[in-house]
Image 1: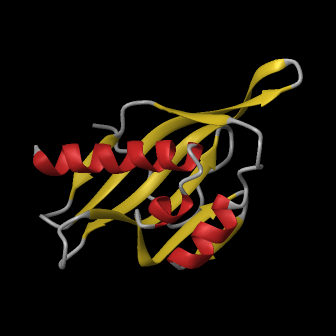
Image 2: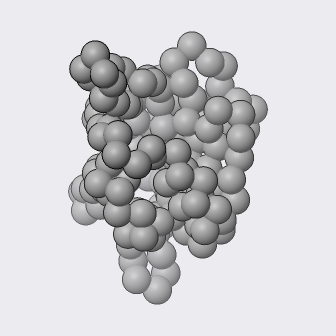
Length: 141
């Protein structure tokens, strides 16, 4: 159960640190050689992910990620897959609006040195978009 709770915490920290614009701490949630795919673009390496994805957060415009309960499949003691439905809200002149909805498809690994779970890869599939080739679909059961 410890691995499941650690992974749930990682997924929650992703959203909360990003929304709080704590980009240096947020970047530490990724492996050095992690990949991140969204909107047809793929970023490789922690520094590129932090720069590009963190840079998508417009300054002065509060936003909030809302996450549903992840589905987590462990693969031994040091690897896992996770799927998490999400939505992102943003503020507009008219109030709060939903910016996007989708699902995170994550490959996670536990670090050998510190034992912390990190994202090895994260692919965001927006609602209605097809699953990209090579991305694991959510299990049926």
